[in-house]
Length: 261
Ligand SMILES: Nc1ncnc2c1ncn2[C@@H]1O[C@H](COP(=O)(O)OP(=O)(O)O)[C@@H](O)[C@H]1O
Ligand SMILES: [Mg+2]
Image 1 (cartoon, rainbow, N blue to C red):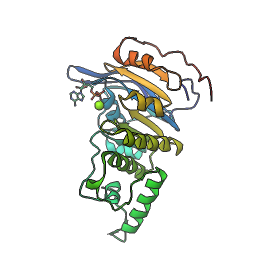
Image 2 (image 1 turned 135 degrees about the vertical axis):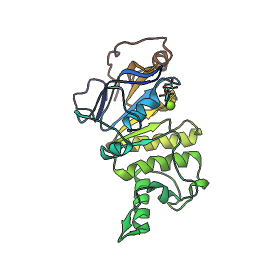
Image 3 (image 1 turned 180 degrees about the horizontal axis):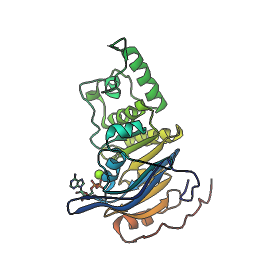
Image 4 (image 1 turned 135 degrees about the horizontal axis):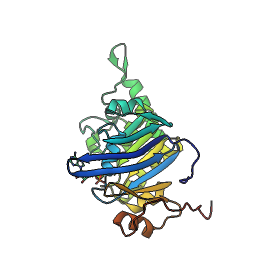
């Protein structure tokens, strides 16, 4: 998938700005993601990546600019508004409960009930199906979180987003603290999300991860768009140049089609 895409984006941000007192966290940022597409959002520390994620998730509201879902203007004034729009987010801190098992974590705050009682059977069944859909290798949905590795915890956090049948999943630095093997598993989950037809925003500053799974790479620098790349063709040096500012790109690069495929 590339920048010249006739389809209406699932989500579009147009000229989004957000300021924290003197800090311009985002300045006139444009961003799009389609269904069946993984868009990486990269940039150095303080580039504005998490701020963008929080705006999409309804945690922060932009000072100016437009948000569209399916081409229609929307506002996302709260996390529950994001949920209604079927936008789910995994934040950097994961927000999981260590003392609870996998199923309880997946349904935290959204427990299924039957005749006023918790429906443990149905929750476990759904948990198993979701982990299976994600091709997760977590041994049992009854495993307490505190016995899982950092990678497995990230899997649970990603699985949790699927409870609300989202159309768009935002992942903020999902591989930041993971080993190589754990990272590979999380990247597989991201590919599964795309296969399931979701749009994915992958925030990362690991170039290998980003190039492994994303279709398009959007660079932020000092809160501004600083390049848009087709992941299949962009070189490591080009992307790094945009991140560090060695190349300042007011406009998007020409789209080049992959040589093979
Ligand atoms: N709640 C906040 N209050 C004040 N400044 C903030 C807040 N959140 C982010 N910032 C500032 O906005 C800029 C962008 O931050 P952030 O979006 O977290 O960047 P990134 O995720 O790319 O590292 C940084 O300078 C950061 O210090
Ligand atoms: Mg961040």
